Each structure stands twice: as C-alpha cells, then as structure tokens.
Length: 416
Image 1 (spheres, rainbow, N blue to C red):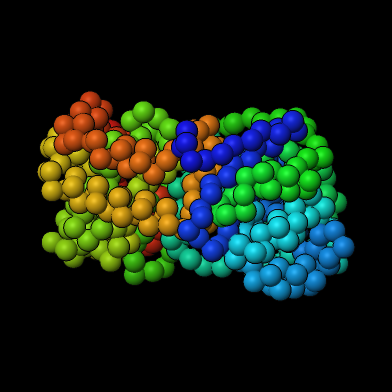
Image 2: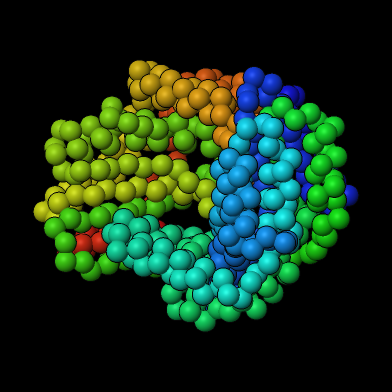
C-alpha cells in the first residue's frame, strides 16, 4: 500500500482514499460504484449505460439545464461512464471549488431526478452512439471478437443493442438504479490539497447515510464460436485476433505486458517493423494485453489490403511465436522500460490520472501501489525473465474475426 495514500472505510461499506498533492492547484475526484453492464438483464442490454447517462440529466433541485450550468459556473470538468464492472463518476477543477463540486456529484449519484421528459432524448443519444459504431469497421470487429472471446455477460457492449434499448422505459431505469446503486463496494478517490480531516467530514456528511444492499452476480455463459467473418464490400480487410493471457493482478502479468510491448510498442516494435515497414502489408498493426472482468486476453488488430491480408495474418502469428523461441534483445527490453517509465511518471503529475489509478488498483488488487512500486515491477525484469515466461507456454490458440470481402484461413491447430 502506498504510504502516502490515506484510507478510511465507512460503516456503510464505502471506502475513501486521499492522495495529498500540495504542489497542485487542482483537485480531482474519481468515484466508482460497483454496477456495470454485466448487471444488465439479458433482454435489457444497455440499461446500465442509460441509467448512468440519466443521472447527469438533473439531480436534487436541479433540472438538466441548471445542473449543467451549476457545474459550468464552478469551472469544473466532469463526466460519467458505465463500464462492464462499474459506473465511474469523475470531476476535476481548481482547489477552491472542491466542496461545491463534490456536493453536486453526490447529488448526481444519490438523488438523480430521472425526469421522464429527459428519457427519450437520452435514449436517442445512446442509440446514435451505437449506430455510429456500426458504421465504423474497427468498432464492429472489436465488438464481434469480444462476443466470441469471453463468457456472457462480459462479452456484451456496454452501450447495448438497438433492439433492447428501444424497449427500455424510464421505469426500467428507476428500478435498475434502486436495485444496484449502493454504498457498499463504492470507492471515492480524491487528489488535491483539501486536508484529510476536512475531506473525511465532507464525505461522511454527503455519503454517510447512503444505504448498502446485496446484489447478485449474474451467471456466466460460455461464449460460442472461434472464427467469424463479417462480409463487407471494402478494399481493406480488418483482422482481429484474440488469445488467452494472464489477467491484471496475476503474478506473470508484468512479464506478459512487457513482452508484448516488444511486439507492439511503437514504430520500432516487431510487428510494426516486420508487417508494415519491411513488407508494406498494412497501414496499422498492433497488439496488447487486456483484462475483461476476470479474463485476460491478448488482442491483436491489423488493417490491410485485401490481397495482403493472409500474408499479414501469417506474419503476425509468426512474430507472436518468436517470443517463445527467441529471447528479446536487451535494447528491445530497455526501450519498453523507458517508454513505461515515461508514461508512469507523466501520469503521476496529473491529479486526474492519480485518482483513476487508485480506483484501478483497489478494484483489481485491493491495494494501491506507489509510483516506485509500479516502476520496480518493470525495472527488475530481465531478458531471461521474459524468455522463461514465453518459452514455458505452448503455442497460443486464437479466436479470429475478419471484416472485408474475404474470410481468411487460420490453421486448425491454432484455433481455440
């Protein structure tokens, strides 16, 4: 646990973290409520996101317009979003405005109005987001590879489907809120210079009476299929690969992330060099390790010309396999370490990044790491560490989605 982070657990199950930043004239809040799209009923996909958006359309005595203007008058930047696991609320501004801002965000979370005359416009906004993504090939492919890669309900889009959204009502939103929004499990992370005692008193005043309740976890259903092709009359072919990997929090996670950083960590990475620079087979290619609920996945994407797609696919798999049979070079490892250090240090200078990091660590690790701890996870890695990890694993098996005129061939022994 970062010794600079102060923590308090309240009787109703809410947890408060405070990262004092006396050098900063800004504050940031990040509040995570443990309700997300995985709690949507099978026929109500998108309800968590719709409920989240409706909290922003009036709270307490403020209607939609006056709530927006109240935040604007404070010079505050705020936002909210529903992910698969939780609903996040955030705000940042100048330090003098932190109390009034927290009061407004507390109203949004605890006393949303859910005015019926706001519902249709709110739902239409979400529908437009879905339609926009349906017109974007990369978004369509990402949605499909998610569907076949991880179990239900983790494999659904948080935005939902047009058909289910069309059937939702304002009563559905109210019932979802009353059933799932709760104090227990909620985390409030704050960075700034408001003072620990003063902050605790304010949070207790605003959230101390918030009720806790039990919420059932939805049953998981295994995903179906390994290969999927989306027919599209386009000159490009979009390739999406997914394979099992370790999730965030696993002991080997840092070795996996660093190894794939060598594979896809910028213009000097192996994929960029081998697929794009040497052969000119694509306009973009990349890979990363993602965590979806309890599941870790290697996700690869390549956008290429139709006639080059099969060759590009084969080279991507070959480069992934190289991690198993050929140690990375020290220069490759050092480049990833330098890039990671730069990213972590830069994030640490932002109050908004600091509170997001607290939420991420606590929800996934049940601890909050210091910057030094994060850096040490990478700095201690050696070429032998990476080789030991990848060489001990069998060849990866993939699930694949292609979008374009032609489907591609994936060897049967490499299909999950």
